Image (tube, rainbow, N blue to C red; front, side):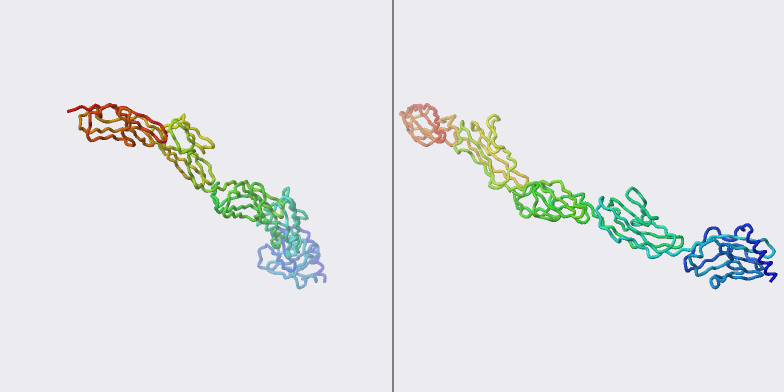
Length: 483
């Protein structure tokens, strides 16, 4: 009994010594409730056992081994002491085991070595949940507050958006030690998946991902036609397609010249399109969650009839030199342009002798000249078709330049042969006279088998144009002599 008393006095004195270097590892030890922890001594083992080792929790002795062995009853069955190293294992940990642990070691024949460390006991992270599980929001208008809860102790919180850490900003707030995430004026990029990562020095856990339903748009509206032309032939089929960026998908409405059509949907099909459907088409995208809409730029196109029945018509068929005539170019269908050209038989139109009226519909020849006879073409066109009717203009003129070809002197019983000619359209008719007396009608040639002395005289050829009703004559003198 006396020996034991002396040992306790000595041990008490030893426990007050300065902490030894390297007896216990630096830094606190972390362990979980229900688990175990090893307090490892860093001294090099000796050939002889330590003379004494005492472990303390705070100021209370846990176990003493040496001349006198003693274990605190509270730790019976929960500790294992390793005599060769002086290390101690503590099992069946609970939160009350957190605190400061120290050890005093007296090697045989050496000075006392002591060490101190801290043990922190944690309840493992579990049951990490986020509420609410979802939220229905509108971009720029909505706000959301997510709360993260978890079992465990000494918890820290980290929020992730698609694996990227969520940090505070003018829109993002982290409160309640980071367990509450508040986002104001949400954007589509806040939709997640959002996860709450909870951890302590011993364990960690992550919630199920939360996806926010954030409605946005419509925006970037685009209107496209199945054909890129601005003009379409009547009877064609055209598809107009409208698209926009929107969540949920936008509803599409169609307008013609600003008037709402009955068609709804991203595609407008115009079948067997008619001229009355020409105009400016636009589409409007509407989001029934955000209550926002966007209207496209108008797409203008015209529906045209194919040109048909084209013709060039004169104002009169009595196209006599010196008079005037109007040539009218017309057709059925949609007409955009008319262009005139002439294929002349001679010098052609004089620049000062024609005028165009009514958007080139009428070509007026003011004073006809015979050189203006020819083929008059009128090219009628629109963006979907064209035609080029023509009219052959014949200018009636004459007779003029009347001439008689034949001998001036012949003998009795010779043939009399004379030919009369003139310039005339249509061809002239001819009347022959001898000394003023008609001797032949309707023939350009005068012929007699045997001449007589009485056939001498002045032969007149009179040319007449039945259309122009003009006449012209020429006189030829013939002398018949005897043998």
